[in-house]
Every structure is written in structure tokens, then in C-alpha cells.
Amino acid sequence: MARHHFSFSSCRNRRIGEFLKELDLTEGRSTGISKILKVIKENGSPAPEFETDDDRSYFLIRLPVHKDAVVVETPVKTSATPQVTPQVTPQVVQLIRVLDGEMNRERLQAELGLSARKNFRMLYLKPALQEGLIEMTIPEKPTSRSQKYRLTDLGRKLVADAGKKP
Image 1 (cartoon, rainbow, N blue to C red):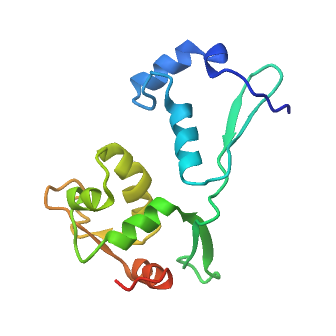
Image 2 (image 1 turned 90 degrees about the horizontal axis):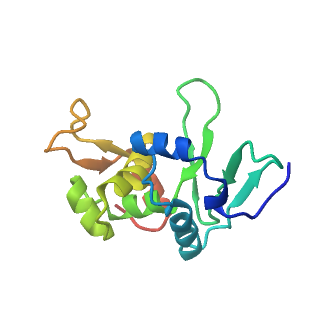
């Protein structure tokens, strides 16, 4: 497998791009990779690795974990030993640090200085919920206007371990 530095526009498959745009998985303006590279540089993350084969039959991007990513031990729901989960990103750490009591999405975004709802949900809210660090106050109605979020015991432990008591 060869690693190549290449122009993304020179090897773009327009049919795949159009399909992904229709599914709302891409914006269609060819700014995704440049945005990723900009944010990675700004937050001090390791540089991504781009890989393809000589025939360019596939494209792979590896995004190494940031050196300050927090590792959380999450109990597995079996008798097995705790599972170490390196998925707690700096964004999730920011979220749980500002979460005070019960807060709605709008207030959380404001506390974090974020305006893009989709970005907030994908990079902050969903990962924090998936890792069991926060929970919904109305889990049976996840899209409720009255929905708020609060720290779980695991989230409070992580915040305490990071040096800020909830």
C-alpha cells in the first residue's frame, strides 16, 4: 500500500460525491478535508495519515487520537473487567466541564461558544451520551423541546479527576 499526497479534486468520483450529498453526508463544496486539517492544526492533534493504493481504488484517512484525549474506564455490563475507552475527545471534556446541573442544548452551546447545532450534536452531545458521561432528563422523548442534559456518576467522576468538581 502506497501513501500518496495528491489533490482531492483530481481523484474525486462525482457520482459518489453526488450520492453522499443527497444523503446529507457531505456538503458538496469540497471544503471538508481543508476544514478537518485546519481544526486538527488548531487543536494540536497529530497530523492525519492519508492512504490509497497505486490504482486509487480506495481512500483511507487515519485520525490519530489527540495526546490530551482522556481515557475513561467504562464498566462493561458483564462480569468482565472494565473496558478502557479512548473515545473521550477534548470536545466531550469541554462539554462535561461546562455542564452544571440540568442544562438544555441551547444553553450548553452558548456556554461552549458554539453556533452550529449539527456540529455540536455530532462532536459533543452524541459522544458524551454514548460514553455514558451525560444523560437526558427525558430519555423517552429525546427530541422534546424540554429536553435537558445532566452529568452521570461517571461524568462527575471524570470532571473531578480532571480537576474541577461538579
